[in-house]
Image (cartoon, rainbow, N blue to C red; front, side, top):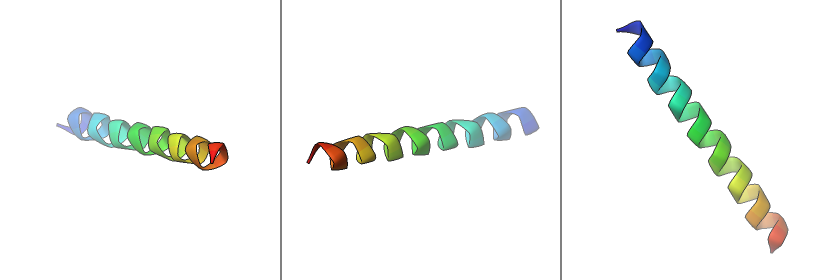
Length: 30
């Protein structure tokens, strides 16, 4: 059960990091 929760949190963190990087690149592009 703990592994599933840890994997879920890790996935959410990775998605947030990717989104922040993409937004930063788009902001710099404009």
